[in-house]
Length: 417
View 1 (spheres, one colour):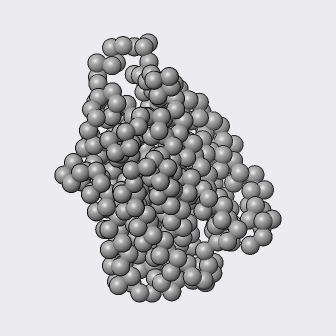
View 2: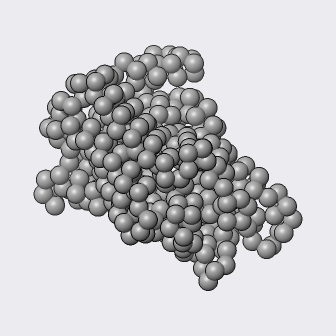
């Protein structure tokens, strides 16, 4: 693919506004969650299990809400869902700003419970955003542009994932003082910018339903569709278990502190190493998108993700650890692009909300469950053995999925377009 073809989609003014909104909201979310992790670890409890509990606090409401958020994303305006979700995030960010500032000292009496409460509510909001975002994007662009749109969307997401934690780490630990309030104030401005860009995109029609269904029937049909499509199910399973077992990002604050002997300012860059690797891969995929050998690439890159995770666990040098985490991002992003493209190309428009919600349950929740698993495993096994265990389980997952669905290795993305 030529350079001109790869950037052609960026001339689409509504897609460009969508991308700006994704950049702002992802940057805000990454800064907020990184700051929450830092606050709880450094200000309340330097305990790996507590870091894992943050993820569990978010994933429980996220999974429960995801069972019906997809239903609503298929029957009401997806743009309205995005606007309401962003507004809710803005209110939460403003509360965290007031909690962390000196304006209302009485709020600090709430302790860590205030942070956990906001994370719990954020899990509910994220379920609706996850169900509506990808389907809304497919209403903006043409079908033949799905792969390009997914690649650029992923690039922007990972770019924000790099910048967000770096800013959070640098601002939070500025001049050896804790400045969580500054981080949350910046989040608020970013979310205001997100609202402006979403407002500038015209509303899209609600997809026509093929039949009248109750909410329960609608939810069941989405789950049945995913379960009956072996390609989608295999791709989701690979990502879910890879993130569940192989994601060591949640305990990076503890790894930075206890293994590398460094402070929160070093955490920010290390935390974003996977995102840097993902962005590098995204620009490569923008010009050479997954095609004939997409299935084999998916299997090999998830396995390489597991190997890189194991190598990260063995690092005692900061820059070597950074490189290994960067490689996890390189390999992970290939599977992300392939998975999202499969979902968009193989799912009817009137089911995209429900299928995106199921995808979120599989993959999105595994980030938080993975955070809990990482924290619990680190507590039981120790930091280094727990990360090695996670990487090994990722490799075993690849072998298992290949055995259960050998056809996945023959997946040809060009045949789906």
